[in-house]
Length: 119
Image (tube, rainbow, N blue to C red; front, side, top):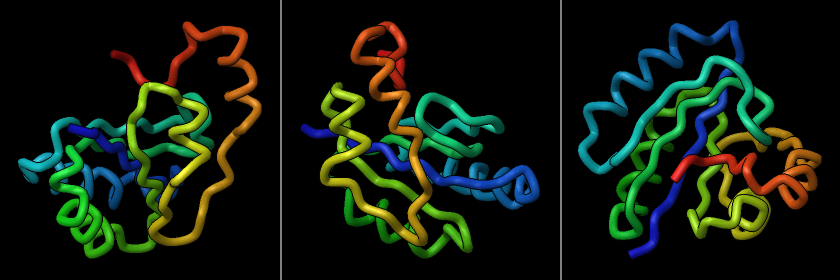
């Protein structure tokens, strides 16, 4: 079964609403993983809440994210294990797209140890 990730982006001005949203997401059993990052990580230029879920929950999780994201932008992508493809092809945005740091993807081509997601 395929797995998906969602990245919910926020600025330092919105850390309290982001924490509230992360706490709500932690209560959703469909999210297999939920972690808040207060600083940019990998190609992600802002703080974010990262959630993981399975393909069979994609519609439910997308709907929950859309209903609960407020003004936050959300990137949804499949997790194939190829960070470059996962963050550039067949992605879906809820809200305004955030500019991803594509130079990071060039860097991981020559330094694969810098994967975005730990196994």
